[in-house]
Image (cartoon, rainbow, N blue to C red):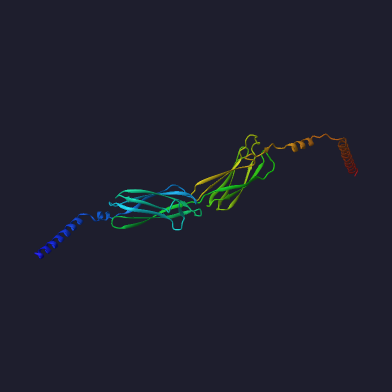
Length: 315
């Protein structure tokens, strides 16, 4: 009797094992794997198109539970290898109690780019820790954050070389471009234009970060100065490494006013007056004496020639 009970238990165990094996075989291997929780980052976005050193910005992350099973106690932490980005609030971590199977959740992290960053892309590491009813899991993701240095110029020491400018005169305008940004600038040029000067352009070239370049423009005075307004200026244009164009404007002269005056023709008038001046008595006497001398010389020459002619005839 005891042996029969023991055999029944064995047979029952075998039957259960066979049934379990049959049930497992009914599921394809892919579906069986899908029962294991898998949380992954499906997308991320930055709150700013361009991030400069020292900027605050936000990283938005979408997490998806790709399995059918619910996960729990999810902790997401964001960090950088060398502290290039600092969390604005807390420690850079976020917590989600649970995510149902095949559901999504969004997280947002506030960060600040350190002011000493260079012009390049940096890595942000996202660490995701979660668990199901049986064990815990860890997933590591990478986010790339491009950082750009600001391009900025300052125009100084702008002046006009000539002290007095008359209508039609050439004007030499001198100035200095200072690259005070953190990035090199390219294709720099300066154009002078305004209401009483002609437009003129000079090409400067490229200027490295922290360096300066000189501007020397030759233009011409085209109109007299107006009392109400004379907007004369230099416009600096340049590009960054990506080809984006920027410009900076500085006024010439006294808030854009160049004092152009009429030409002085007094010297020419004086010369004309001098040429029309009447002769004095002395001038007349000298002319008479010179005329007499010329006549005497001419008379003597004629007498000499006649005498020689007579002498030849007698010979």
